[in-house]
Length: 129
Image 1 (spheres, rainbow, N blue to C red):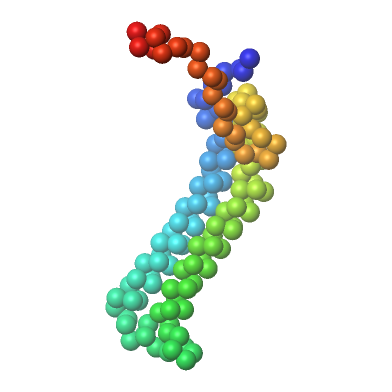
Image 2 (spheres, one colour; image 1 turned 180 degrees about the horizontal axis):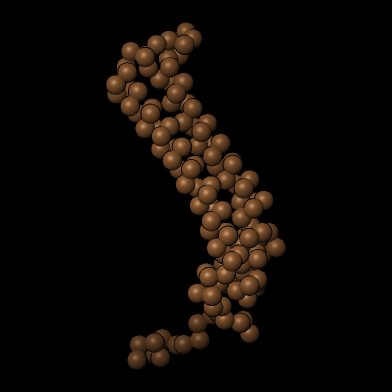
């Protein structure tokens, strides 16, 4: 039998609060950085077309280079988040789950697993009543 999890108590636990704090401390600055970078690119494209059209190398313009940096920046932020999640967030997730009594929901890697639902035992006649 699975024990019930007190989700409100789990949310108030110091481990969960630390997890939320550390995630927010990474996600908020990363999001601000992404938005400023992207908005800067859009503003330059709209208000500095001569600068964006300058050739860097044989037809490659500043605009193209900055557009490509958007992809590099997103991949870099994604890599940083995954690295931080593996090293910092997952151990905190495990501690918070242990305190909540929900260890049966967590795989050895720290990733939450979806439980398969129990087979339905009601018949069509019972369900239609």
